[in-house]
Length: 229
Image (cartoon, rainbow, N blue to C red; front, side):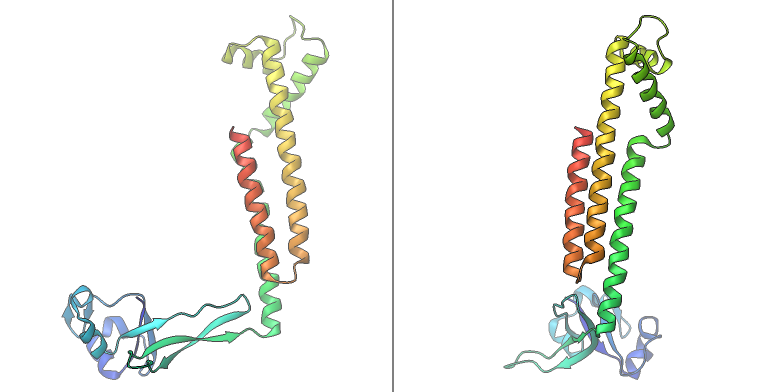
């Protein structure tokens, strides 16, 4: 349970480490009861419900809000039909200016996420060896175009063949297959990223941005499984 308490001067005097920076009459949120309260060690875990109530710790309720609302001040409420009083956050509607500002900031955040996810995936596959793979692909294509000759085998092909105990032809075909697969990944990454970025930019509300982000996350999950399989 999350608690709140309205601070008194006595509270501050007896609990300076906990409340030294708080003001009298300020309502303070506590994610859990303090270990020490009013010089009593072991308060958390040993204090009875009655003692907690007498010490004015009350439940803090957090209402559900929409993407056009925010939590406001903590307010005091009397309990209904004999139940204990409680605190609850007020719900404040964003102004239209705030809604538009929040939406634009969120759009930028998600677009940057798309870019970052793309960069991370590329790094995880090719790292700093993109030039090496480009050379291997170029040499493989030339070797295949020349009819897989027995002599003048490109180093990229021969080294792969020796390392994996393949024939030069098998090594060449595997290099080209991997290159083709990587081209497919790059095309899918680019097309989906551009499509979903456009959807985010045109989104009229946060829900539409979330929908585009969910589509991106699903696509990336699928793509990673295809790469690793």
